[in-house]
Length: 302
Image (cartoon, rainbow, N blue to C red; front, side, top):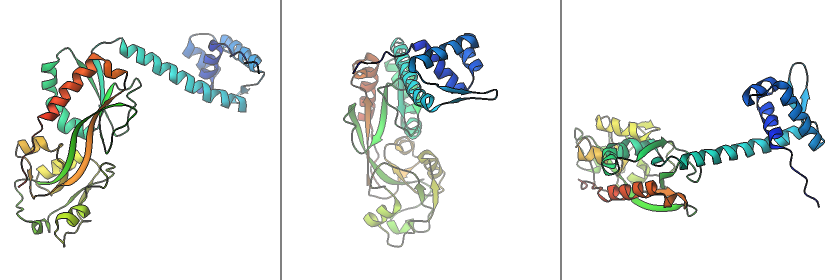
């Protein structure tokens, strides 16, 4: 079967702009040509495909069934082209390193240590991206990431940084000497926590360490761990917190590990693509963050 020739790219570009704007005039303004030139490109494209792509009326421009099919393809094609151009542009800017991670890790662990990174690599320009969605480090949005998960993504270049645990913390203002002292205190809960599994919640704590009468469903619920940490520092309740994220608060004696015991957490990984792992700036940041994690020191449980 003979392969059919693809239509001209300029005609597909014009089509994509008309489809997005539902307007020949707006498409012409985007591309920088006249509406007549856009109409000519659409006629060329329709003749090439032997299909009408738009229904035109005095009030609106809408896609035909064939136009819908082509628009899905053109959208994907131009998105891929834009990503490639962004990747080339980022690669041409040495020293610009985009790191993606969660806002909790960024606020509680990374930001306090940025002066150390700048002192080690003053020439390194770091761009920080935070969010809960996983960003594809193979694309243009991020060069590397620090991720919290139960296991490594084998499709990427992974380095294990830290195995987390969850400990019971409270302000030094609160008196806790035994598990029974938890009864009557406000329990803080973190909602929408997807890692680790099983969740380090009060039900699991009670099963492991007691006390039997602990009202595990009562208390205050947060959707952000950083807010819960601040409330615990203020002495408003007790929290099962990531050992890593409360390291600074423990060192400053704003929080203390109130009772012995811990629940398993997830793992922190430094991840990047196998191609970007060869970049000098990625290697510099990776070495620095490995050394920073190696110095993590958690005060002993009370």
